[in-house]
Length: 95
Ligand SMILES: [Zn+2]
Image (cartoon, rainbow, N blue to C red; front, side, top):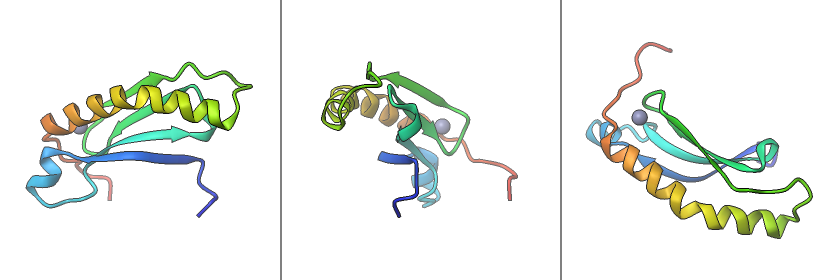
């Protein structure tokens, strides 16, 4: 599907998710088309969220944008993974 405006770059199963075999309990690293300049980290199990600046400019080319994302990605991965490892939260209600 090309209609989506955000791309999940990486996804980490949380401790809670692995405990109950719920593949939806993840920490996602998200690249938003309309929010170039930052990567968003979101936990689906709790309210934890984090943003990392990629230092992109509006007139960056696609290659420059990809390079900036690639540069910040190791930090994003480390941060997402360390939250996933400690997150035991289960979402309540909703449905
Ligand atoms: Zn969490």
